[in-house]
Image (cartoon, rainbow, N blue to C red):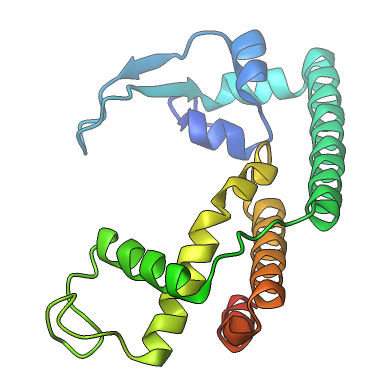
Length: 200
């Protein structure tokens, strides 16, 4: 038998399989509401008598609401997977147009971009502009600049939420961008391959 003075928090009710709309519609107002004396929080503590929660869980209304909630959850999962598949297809099909610049112009823009991002010191530790950057550093800077120049393609990820779907799509997009940079600038291909490998 349940102790009639035992309460369960909103989080505890959710752990039992309730959704917020089920709590609102079937339980209504909490039995106790106020500030948690153990810690400061803007959100008031909402407590429900456990015996009342268990009583509602045995009703036909709760069973119907629970089935409806599960059906909505499945439908939302199907929609999210369809959206993820559509975004992945769009990323695979999207032509990536890398700006083609003469070597000296790309170097100048890459160095300027690096300095605008806060790289106030050159690769050798001196002040920026004291000496030309090392070749390896300059290659990294050029790839970073071109990657930034292609940031408009990030909009292909719009509408994707959740770690798995967005993570997969983001990795695919970055791989395609680096592959496009490598194809447009063969001298930068090694750095692009290194970045792709790091992403995996």
